[in-house]
Amino acid sequence: MHHEDLRLQQLSQWLDQQLPTLFAAQGWGPVPAAELVPASSDASFRRYFRWEAEGRTLILMDAPPPREDCRPFVKVAGMLAEAGVHVPRILAADVEQGFLVLDDLGRQTYLDVINSDNADQLFDDALQALLTFQKRSLDVPMPSYDDALLRRELQLFPEWYLQRHLGVELEGERLAAWQRISDLLIDSALAQPKVLVHRDYMPRNLMLSAPNPGVLDFQDAVYGPVTYDVTCLFKDAFLSWPEERVAGWLERYWNQAREEGIPVQAEFSEFHRASDLMGVQRHLKVIGIFARICHRDGKPKYLGDVPRFFAYIKAVIERRPELAELSDLLASLPRDEVSHP
Image (cartoon, rainbow, N blue to C red; front, side, top):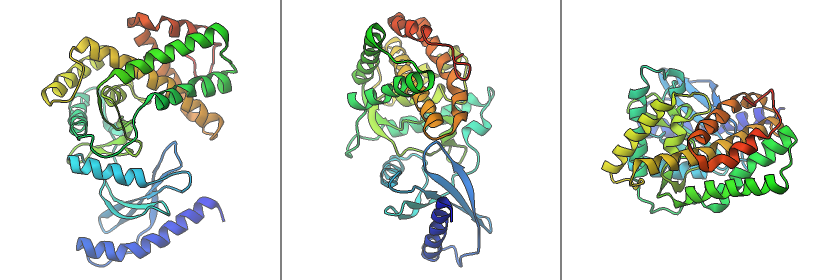
């Protein structure tokens, strides 16, 4: 039997044991018969299934150990729920096996529904949720977005995109330039005020729901730079917005953050620069990850989104002269018909 099917069988058996207790606890009456259908999967090894019967739905998370650990998901879900963010409730869990039962926040992600007419309203809700969790006090031990983590992420770009995908080995002057660029981006990130950071706060992980939005995929949360999540939200892998519209949204966020007592930079120009450099760090990392997903995990479709990230980087380079070395480095790369703009 196929390994994943075996996992699904184990998940089903475990669920059958959990449901009677769960239904009784919620006052839902007898458990109806239902099938598990795939709800979504992502670039990791986690999978989600939907259980549905008689108008009631539940979400099952399958996080196979040792590749995935669902404990951080459980921990962060608790922190966010406590702060007042709309996240899935965990109705049953077996963290050793990597099985969770969650309540269902709906079928429509922001990515499914957002357009230029409703974006202001949807992003407004997303910013409110973001401010809510940035207000969460940093009182629980959590990983920090430190020098080591930022550097490890940046290295994905030369390791997977340059070496593995383009066959380019950085050495000599180009390597020295890359190190200076990395230091600039990391120093900027580390100089920022710290808050709780989701790390993938983007339309695909926000659900249209009441209260809006439902927030998913928060298990990699850390304490880190205040501009990280808001930059993620507007410079997404699957959607791009006009630069001036993004600048307007960023300024709106910055004003609200100041009113709410979130520790943002004192001047918008300073905040905007920090956001730009934070974005470049993330975009270089993501380009590396997409190359890795292609070459290591055999999923080439993600490479199709690489040009979007190069476009974000290019727009920032044009207004940040301190990134001239990055501009030269990118200009020196061989053209890649798959993913180079």
